[in-house]
Length: 345
Image (tube, rainbow, N blue to C red; front, side):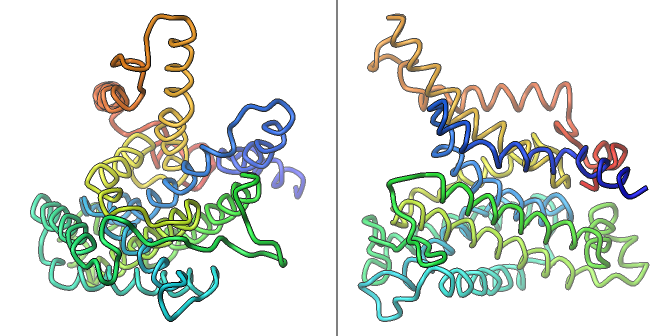
């Protein structure tokens, strides 16, 4: 019976993805595939999408401002760690403080907006994202404006400071963050709070009639999603040793996170992981290599439209969304399908 239980766990899709991910750096080192470096971005976006999945997937609130919380996390981490500021914390204390700041930012946005629903809430979160971007750009004395905050220190584990010489330690560290956040999200989903979120998503009026404090539960979802997004921002800034300019956290980032959730499956944790791999892996691995292959064949040049994958990346994304909405509107791995397969998505 115990062996059967272990085997059933190994058959779970999320566990299979983890096992495959553990071997990616090894195959990358042996065969020089160049996968570990671009997949680090995929892991960061997976974390960001997991935060959005708590708000939109579990609770059913359309959130178009996740990039703002990612920016808040990145700049909070930068201010807490950079040498030009008095704090100068190391990676782990700064990451913990950034998480708390994300919770506070989510609560501050959620408090005045929880009475809004649907399109109205989406417009408010969209406006919040634009406000945060402009504030970061204009508070140059604090945020360094368009220059961004740099240089930022990398993580330190067991006395080893992560550098730019190898992407493999970064990959394993960020994979560990994804695993921890997935475990947290699964426990939240199975908890009383998670069941309340799902009830609100199904029918908020019925949930209120059953005694669920909808406003408090939605506030908690907002704060949780903001904290996870802030962690993604801190990891992004640490990876590139800079916050980058505020324009890096524009509306396109929020839309991309939403696309990951929709393509993977609303409310499905495993679906979000698959969606992040499909969307970001496609953009960072397949498209650049396709463009390079076309240039090597002499079919396109660097100056042509198809020579630069950024010129047609969003064209492909849009086509994928149209096809998904037409043929599989519930996503690649809907939450119900994951349950029937025995994986608690």
